[in-house]
Image (tube, rainbow, N blue to C red):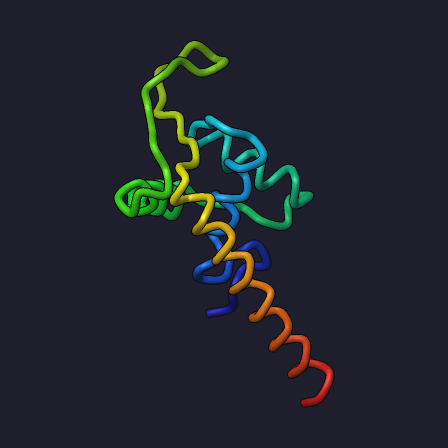
Length: 111
């Protein structure tokens, strides 16, 4: 089965979520996906089936905290924000991403 062009590499979702929450603290799930899609010029799309389990896992890891609040459309939703552990994890994820892209670039240039 061919991959969709908007599939996110396994492992990059945490990086995208953490970075988004660093730039825009306290977002609910739909706002997170909308922001990622908008900023990527529709190249990346985060599906609900991937996002919410990832948010739950990151909260369990202590990288995020959540609280209930009211959205701009007057709906109740969980709002997420980074913790100190999440900021540390974001630094680690960024370094990992840099290593990965450097390795891929080398293979593309020399294969």
